Length: 352
Image (cartoon, rainbow, N blue to C red; front, side, top):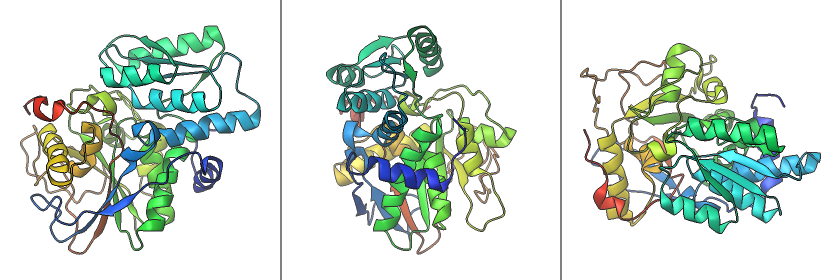
């Protein structure tokens, strides 16, 4: 299967999964983020954490399995995936809906709330290593020996196209939207959202933790590269390498509306998550709060000690921290996942 992504893929995915996922709810968020860089902007929240299985991943999983069923390429051995949690949940849920066996590999340190939910969907859960990359290697070995269809948490055009259907729904509900903020781990959501956003003249901003910056590093290098992962959001944004689909979606191509890449420190992520809870009674993962953290960073430049003077053009420079919208700019923040333990609101690691 070709490893490219176009707007036609997203339109096809939208037709394929219609009626099989929950349409995203979009709500105005006046006042939220005024303590940071969002003053003067018109802020909206895309409440995708209300999706089946608690994250946007249900979209890609449905698109992946339904496309293979249409093509007659679903094996008797079922489907297998490696995941920090959310993609595995979505894969197991979609497989259960279609009567397909699912074997899910994930790091042994994955949140227990995710492990328990995986098992509730009937998945065969296998805990391997402490990082996503180790779980992925075990998954690939299993697929090769067992004959199961190997899915991926983010690095597949069907997965990314399914995720991109979220942007189609946001665009339909928020006329005149200027910018969408997207948390990035491996980049599947960003690839799909940015591809659809560009079609509609909307800027997509990729937001990553400063110590889990796979896409940011890839843009600096001009290709996907391995990075170390050390972030409070590492359980869901802890990919060591970004998909090339996201790198392609972020590259400038001469158009006026381009994608951008910014970083945020863990402190801003923790603060954004708590603000969502205290102000809106919205409980999301640290990974989901990362998108909002871009508006709360207040120019915080993390560990590198330089002042942020970047124009946020997504050129891969390490001095790009946070996103400051213009007065009147209409911005939508995607809250993409809520598979988390409420107790961590008070026990999140102290920022370094």
